[in-house]
Amino acid sequence: MLILPLHRPLTRRNFPWLTALLVVINVFVFFGPQARDDERRAAAEQYAQDSGLAKLESDAYARYRQQADSDPAMQEEEADLPESMRAWARYVAMQSDRRFWEGLEQGQWFASPEDWQRWQSLDVRREALLADVVTEHHALPSSDAQPEQYLSSIFLHGSVEHLLGNMLFLIALGLLVEAPLGALRFGLLYLLGGIGAGLAWQAEMSGELTSALGASGAIAALMGAFCVVWGWRRVRLFYWFFVVFDYVRAPALWLLPIWLGWELLQMGFSDSQVAYSAHAGGIVSGALLAFALRQTGGIRTHWLDDSEDESQPAQRAEAEFKRGQAALGQLQLETAEVHLAAAQKLAPERFDVALARLRCAQNARRSEWIGERVIRVLDLPVSTVDELLAKARVTTEIDAALLPTLPSKTLETLIQQLLARGEIEAALGLLPRLQTHPELQAQMPMLRLRIALRLRESLAHAAARRVLQSLLDQHPDSPQAQKARFLLEQG
Image 1 (cartoon, helix red, strand yellow):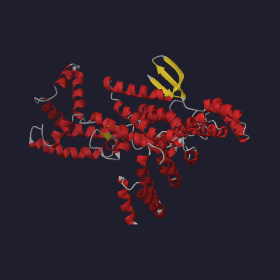
Image 2 (cartoon, rainbow, N blue to C red):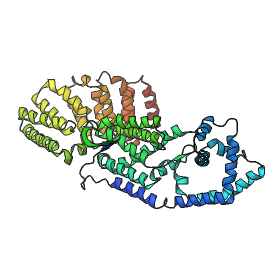
Image 3 (cartoon, rainbow, N blue to C red):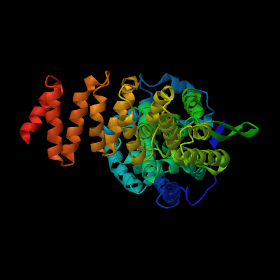
Image 4 (cartoon, helix red, strand yellow):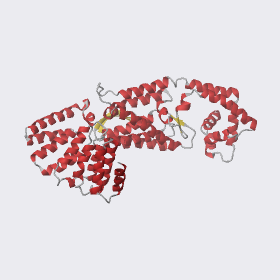
């Protein structure tokens, strides 16, 4: 089963430069530093055979397998194999048996102390031969990983097919995710999602002697991010199931449980060497990171709405919005309402349209519309500081009687977003209005303290002192008042 989102027409405006760079890096690493890994590994294995090192290990493994606590299931599985394959199966099992290798390092399983000493001296030479094997040192081990291996492993691949498959998905998802996030946020999500995928894989493989490599975990993070970034917008999805090939339009968010469920299903029932746990961990990591970006205004929603393959709705929405704005400017309020309602139906997440509809209701003095439209304006995600400041102005301008009807969580989030964007004065200006909200009164001491701390960070000490003093004056018995006194005494 394959479900792949179809990319949008490529233009200079939406060209995914960072995605292209990631593809170049992955291809360069595979055909550059990794290119001689097989040759170097083969040289180390040939040395092990010629020097007698491999025989020492094979004999030691045979003694290890004869111990009473060896795995009976493994013995039964080996007994079912043809005689010609048993030696190879035992060799493969030996390579991933952590308990065996840990014992070998301590001198167990050898016929004599002299064999152990000989093995140690021969193993030094083999390790020297393996020192230049890139995947030996930069893949992600199942335990005791170095911090840099979480990142280096996502730029390694095991074969040309592995590389090509991952790059196909990287290009397809990069075309859809990089533009709405921006290159910096896209790159951070890719790397952090790859780390999350690695941690999920390690949680499953803990105790095994194995390692993982490949960009698929980081790319799975882009899959999870794609679902959240595009949300309920309908996107084109190509699907392939046995001999059925087609594409459909469906909300992007529908793919999140489908993709994640498929990886979890494969984790439980597949015997392949594919790291399905890394894919699942990547999808979850990417979805959570994208959700955090959405909550903090880190997604450029205007780019999502301005697409060539959905040009007719977008163009119609823009045309209706301009007609509505023109009618609003001439105070032709009924005409403006008709055009703006049509624009909002075509582009429900456009902040400027929602704000214009609120202004239309305010000019028409339609109180039955204003409360609902204020809430819509405050709930919509914003992509610019100007839009965030517009939310603050709406909150300060509305009738005081309407304020208690607004969701307290929405207002608290607005304060936090203003502080996160460095708009401290705007946040400070909201406090006199918000302190009349019955559900926010208990939060006012904490909000004032947060603003004061941000002012101190920006070296606006005089303003910070005024806010701290107002906290003491208005909330002298609050837990935050003690902190305010301490800060005021510090100067």
